Image 1 (spheres, rainbow, N blue to C red):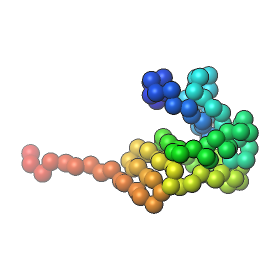
Image 2 (cartoon, rainbow, N blue to C red; image 1 turned 120 degrees about the vertical axis):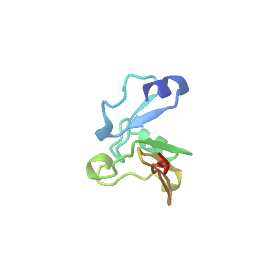
Image 3 (tube, one colour; image 1 turned 90 degrees about the vertical axis):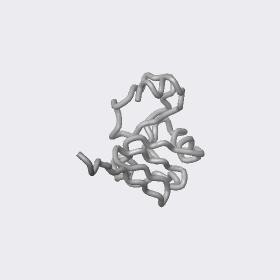
Amino acid sequence: MQQLLNQSNIPYATTPMDKAVISEAHPSFLGIYNGMSSSPASLKATVESADLVLDIGGVVFEDFNTTFWADNIAQSKLLTLGDQFVRMGNILLVLCCVTSLTA
């Protein structure tokens, strides 16, 4: 993850539950997205007006992480990359294993 951030210079934010997973000292770090309690306060508008929000790992949208569901990220702009799935809007791609039938 750190290598991706270093090479791409993609601006990023974390949520309270993701704090300390990736460095807050990185020059591309924007802050903590937490709905109406985002820090800095301008981050809420930055994230929610983005053309694409890349969610690596799967954000937990629950009361603590969103200040009682005060988030407003359009599902059509949220691309989630999970360890076994990819989701954008109503489209869910589930990864499965393929094994050989021959020995």
